Image (cartoon, rainbow, N blue to C red; front, top):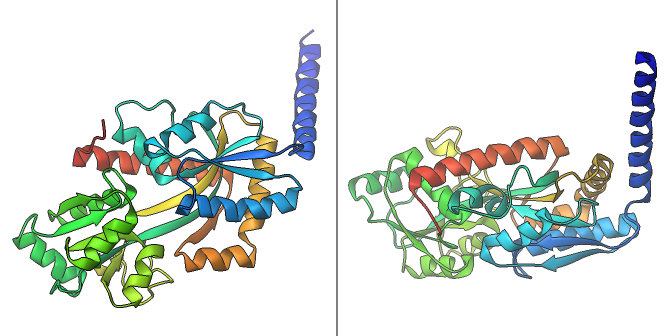
Length: 324
């Protein structure tokens, strides 16, 4: 009797594995929707369209980008969390919706860990600490020294309250034990331009948008927030090498599916997206935008997201930032 139970269990497992393999072989048999929880034309949108144009060609099915921008990415992310776990609705995940928002808002309609199946991390990118040209401080050491003797005197702009750029700045202030004054803007462009104009002392901006202004000598970059230097600004040191070993504050893009999506589909998508990321055209394009290609396994991405939720949650709580 006991032996027959084992045989039934083995047969059940075998049939399940066979079903998963068949599912993966047939997938995708119709168009796949990729939700970008931000407006069209932004960085996340550009990344998603570049990657899935290649994946669509590889798999012979359309991967349709749908922009659902609003509420800091919450609405679009929630729509994927509640979608059927069949591989036909995917999410372009990012630092804000998937790592920061759970701490920023008292209540959000999805759990960033439990409600998604991570597939693959696409990119990471640093922020550039760039100061107005009239600021006399030429490097990070001088900036910190001035800030310590003039608490709050230095103003810095970011793309908005609760943005990953603001949290990068908060993490830096904590590491350097200084106090600066945050001036939030509605978007990275206005935040950068007011730093150029001298309305604020400096800005924390992404490398892609900041670099042209730096190279055109309209603003001075004194540090980047990644552990290593940016390829776009090889002469600009990282905060980590400027006296704060281990410092890192980067943003990222990645692809996720609803929780309980079949592992075989997750694996197939991981392999196909990884293949797309190796395409020379994508690598060149992303490099010009200051994006580092990451890749890796679903397990790698799962571990990374959990670490990011813990890291930024702590920064939000210690900085007492709330958006509701």
